[in-house]
Figure (cartoon, rainbow, N blue to C red):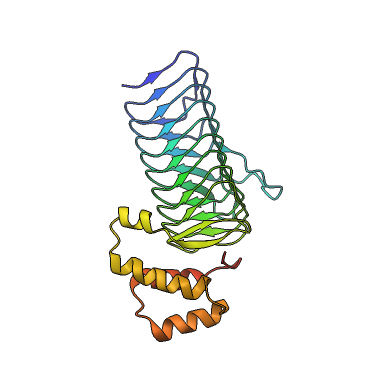
Length: 257
């Protein structure tokens, strides 16, 4: 049984699951899907194209599925997708996609804190944490288990690798490799996100291998191509290290070093 406040405006065309609560003054437009056990607080807007998975919580004043802030947007029908058990805190703005991806998406079990912005065509993985006032420009991609500190602007088309952690208050203008701990002015790779990897069950051997590779990549006088050649010739390429090498190979904007 759903609990919908009398002041909420809910389109009869919206698809609602079971055991949903919708707070006062919230607006649910026509082309919206809300999964089971979702909780929508007060003054929330779920615009056309919004899809919420199961167990999603959306707090006061958040706006999901709004038209992209992109002058090239032509009114095409696109989506803003939120995965199961993700929490969207107060005043988050989450625009839907353009024809580039046809969607913007945030994965499962994420925590998107207050005043964050997810722009058009962003793809955010599972178990991601974005602290207060993180601002993603269009087309940003964030892989699973990444953590972004507060008040953090991320340049358009930047890719942020899995299990990385970026300190608050910096500007992310290039790609961040997986497993990295990142901070400083200018932004640089400080080392391996050792504590995060240990908490998630990575072996000591894998972490040591990443430490060695990071020293060659980011703390030697070699350029990136030379460092990769040295790693391939001198080190065992375990799966975690292969992930880093593949990420660098697929980087379009270049990597933070």
